Length: 204
Image (cartoon, rainbow, N blue to C red; front, top):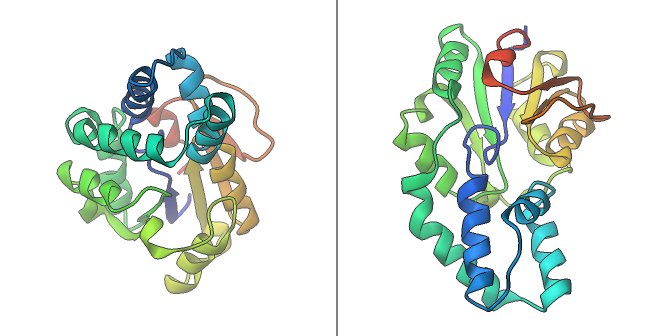
């Protein structure tokens, strides 16, 4: 049983990719560019930087596109983004059993606001967002900060995320990692692979 559960946000706690990819597609279309939603989502699931770089090289989009995308996404994400089914109950269960949840995301303060809108912030002991200025995943720096701050035993901590960089950050920090994905597939960076929130109960 793990006592310290470190969560990624997008695609792990909250099902935000449909909103993010949809906003990205609409922003491309506003510039006369057509791209399949599935392809956009695939690139985003590597990282947002990867997606921006990919389409930047393909179509020459740059900072103005990113600004327009961010504006479009922010208009709709609070109304359309929701936690994955069962996440609220699982975080509450972890908290009620004397264990701790932590957030580690590249997203900004919007992640905390969305957690708050679903009554989740009270179940979390700490939050690491882009505002903290840590080197981005797969760097272990932010996780190492949590380990030092909360006196965490490495063997009692696990990082849960939907991307390789989440898992690599956990492994680079010397803790376990769990790949949260929509289809069962092997991952060289993961100690566990799950396809539903229910499966997490048997791990944590």
